[in-house]
Length: 395
Picture 1 (cartoon, one colour):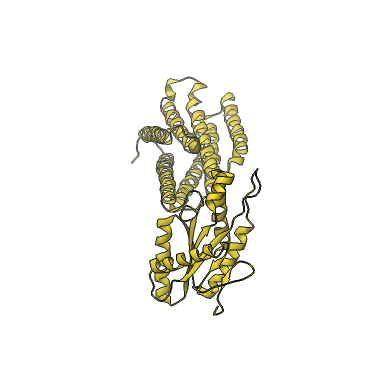
Picture 2 (tube, rainbow, N blue to C red):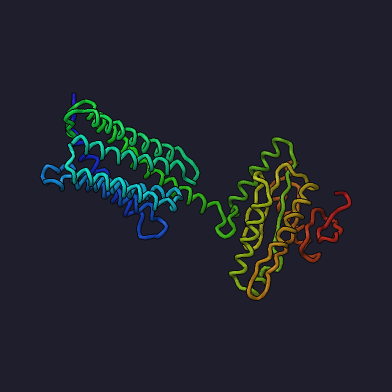
């Protein structure tokens, strides 16, 4: 039993127009959503093109193919959106050249008044190329993979295969009729319809997924330094403490403060102060392990939790950080803004609470400042060494 392919096409046209309009409203005028606006424009273009294809009997040659050309242009615009989304903007020129070649071949077929079968082969081959390139662009994305992205790659790949099969059927058929009620032709329409709807919904979900990630990043990450904010740091630190309690491994907590930060702001300006904090965040990310936790507690105060690290082992780690920060001076017009820090270390193991350990480390941090700054204090009684670190004979 057959079905009305025009009804499917009309439903798809309405879906594309609704998708495009909603996403255009959602994207707004911001420059950061260019890929989203391009995709929305592509859906609007495809919806209009399908309406023209449905009404093609009302036009005379060569205007009967206007909808087909507009449909290919819509898919090209969608390909550009996928390339931009995937971080492959440098490939846009190559994609434009491919589309120019496909459009030229299709226009040549129109000019030569090729048969319906030949035009179906050309049109389906163009769709195969555009959908195939979309699948490749999405699969080569620099973004973190997700099930939704994988499904979007699969839907574009399946549409490309469907178009290729339709091109083969049109090539091998005598007297091909694009509106034929033949089972194979209707199956191709149905598959293309299903995969196209899947493609639209997947992109909507991909945009929502990006929005969710952005909200999560804003809720958990300090925007200036790129490390955990206070709330997220405390959550992660508590998780490490509980894991250490179960495994019996040592864990150390380090409190750190940038020395004379107000003086840096007063002497070099707040922009330099912000850059100093960014440098601190970068050094922490570069020198700590993936299992370690670091965060900005507020202002110029930072904290770290080092799982599997005893008090004695934490001291050289802190000293390496102190040295690295001292070498990460910020160049300014008024001379370099040097970064020195004071640190206090405490043991977080043995069933101690995170608040207790942080309070103890904070006390040692203030002791480091009282002893002249630019040093690490790991115990109550300290002996300054030549580098500025405070060591205990017991360690």
